[in-house]
Image (cartoon, rainbow, N blue to C red; front, side):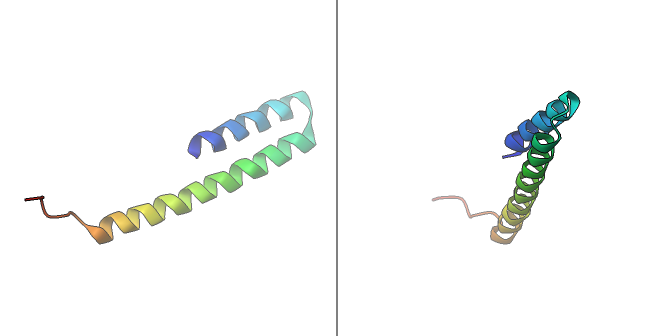
Length: 59
């Protein structure tokens, strides 16, 4: 997911360099949305990881 956010950010930078303002702002908005979704999922994943703790070894 972080890869896609970075890809949309690169597209936004390239579009802005060539003067395509609408495409650049849309790509930047999509990249920002994907990045924030990534951060939320990361925090939820870390919370679940620390709450569950380590499992006892299998017998």
